[in-house]
Length: 205
Length: 368
Image (tube, rainbow over all chains, first blue to last red):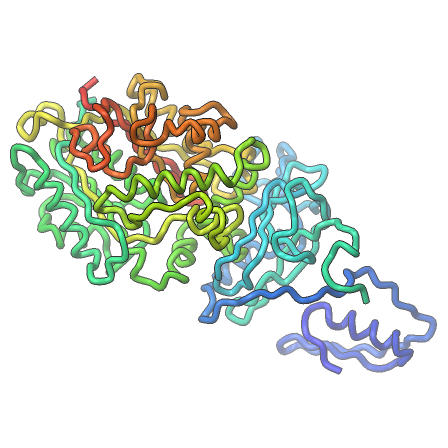
């Protein structure tokens, strides 16, 4: 069985345990290949995942997509994908994304990464219906206030149909693939609203 | 500082000028501006020129102005400051004249938005004004950029989507009489409310069309004004305000701090207050932007912009016409197709980029 994506080894191992089958799991990424012999005896799977949902009808604009700056992507990677802000070494002010000149005290180039909370509240939102290259429309953007820290972040809303989130709603911040650009997956944190499972579209598995 | 006045102004019509390139639109705007100077004007009298262009069409912008207009022996500089670009070139020309560097300057703005396909145009432009790792990839297109503000505004203020529609109806109504307007048809509130959604809360009629066009003003130093006209538009005040460039760093999204800052500068320089402004051309890329701007400019109290809309004060004939849809220069000279009754003070306002740049110019019939 072949699965794709960064999380696929986990799904492969879970599938082996579900099937009660020990065996070899291999994972490849570009020129690297790793393999593990998995013994499932005595193991069980506890899932924390959203119930499956009915697909939302969305359209992707045909064409060449948008240009991407790999250098800009790389500079943003640690903060964006590890979900870490820059914390000023002088005054402790958090900045997302991290920045050379501190938002609080103005100190230059003196900060370190610090983890951000994984929950927050929608400050404002808009759902975009017009076609946008490399993205599937409609999609929902939100400026989310992270819990307990003075940090807001612009992100996509995920796990619910576009347009269903409201200002003031709470939710979790979850890693998602936002888009594919020039064949490169673009990962980032997205807002997953806290709504009862039955409130989300589609049936539970 | 020497005082400065506008003695001539010209603009092309706005629309999809597929048959006109920037090398046609630019000299057309200048020629019309020259023709509007009452006592005559020779282009050899221009001491310096500023060219405003947000995008880049057919190459080097400063060179295009100099070459296409036959102005090869003066300094020409291209300025880009998002949608405040046109305001900023006027500001640069005023600085040059006020400082004594030149006596006569032109500020000419032009853009060819429709030289790329409509689906790509504003997306291409986003790359000029958004963070390439944090904003651009998420699809923070121009309507979304402003919609995030207006969503929050509608959440906190009593205004509704109906008030946005009322602004679209008013601006279409004013545009009908303007021979240079791109859209010259009236719409109803129902049409605006029922139009296809672009970026919530903006429907189609809440959004600007994509336009090609060019406009030019001729500015001269105080002691030379009488040589050109007895009916100048005096520069009374101007300002340029800047804000944080990422939405997540804007503390209160129900207001545009760049507008508040630019207005403060312009009012202080002019020695005027919001009450003194007889009419204004307010940036109306999206209806909700115009609504918030009423408050940022001091025309309506905070969160009471909807009452200003309901009063219809913003129509031609009202107490504070907003976007009568022809140049302020023509209004002050009594030559407008949508003429306001004897206006003395007019204001022009633009906001753009990631809601981070605002330019304001206040013009007066009297020197002040």
